Length: 131
Image 1 (cartoon, helix red, strand yellow):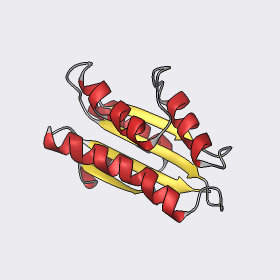
Image 2 (cartoon, rainbow, N blue to C red):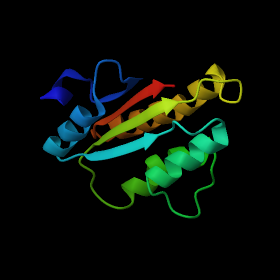
Image 3 (tube, rainbow, N blue to C red):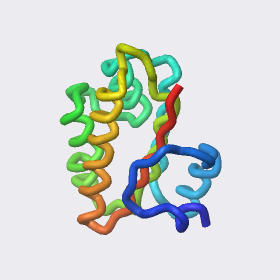
Image 4 (tube, rainbow, N blue to C red):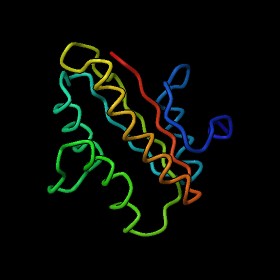
């Protein structure tokens, strides 16, 4: 099984994994599969908007990194027991409006979410790629 070869709480490059395989692995494991394709996003705000839309965040989503973390952790935890998560952020921008520092801040929010779920013994794997 694909997920057995990946640490349970990690944020990493998608590398050789295929989105379809990750989706199937999440399904087979009974875990949530969250996918956002950022091919059309060019800025931090567009990335946050795209994630919010793809992940079906509530209308009150604050569209900042703290709100992203809250939606990926506290909000989800309040909805009940969770089986685990496979998150894919595909084609994150690589341009002056979404530079390396901004990307790392975004990925840090997902790393913090992975730590949150690790403390609760819930797998949270996040894979990403750049344009």
